[in-house]
Length: 302
Image (cartoon, rainbow, N blue to C red):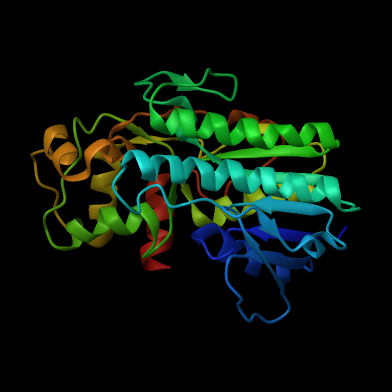
């Protein structure tokens, strides 16, 4: 059954790829944007999260909302003000969507939201399932507030899906671009101890998970949106270097150096999340890439 899907955060890494995939598969797409943009086959509506204004006609004919909006956590240093902005961009945007739904007759049944594995905090080698408790630190608190805001949609009888995203592998974008740049210039090295677990996922599988969530009405709740076999930061660094035919330095970048450069934001690179994808597998999702080397070879050499 083809659906009409409203997407927030449509200009981000996931949003751009998801729109292309949805249109190819015959779904209708409209987007909420902070600025007017011209796009083919897509209706654009305007909103301002911080002023809490929204064009409520964005809900016309929509049966599914995919909520990706949120400030980039790695875009700027984490000052007190920046951290609040990161949280507000996620929580207030969710509140605004639900406010519009309460005030406007609509037929929205499904609300699919991004979240992040940062929900679990730094957990060392512990295997993390969707039933694992919320962790500690800013990332965990941000994700907890984000998901709590999303869960308010249950009072509107919505089907809620929260995708706890890991480290997305996409050529020239996101974390992979940050990691492979020093490797390309022969200065690649593991970060911190290098033992921290990185729950990676190929962008193709990330988009497929969103499509799966849209098209499978029995899918509900939180899901770890990561490949079945996470790797350590050291393994990830070496695998990227292998794909790029570059060496890796035998020394590690000390945590203190990262903290001096990035401040509290260094936790993004240093926390350990050994996530399980079993819940997704139990729902019948099939990954295109389960092995890191295969995913990287596809990205760099396909």
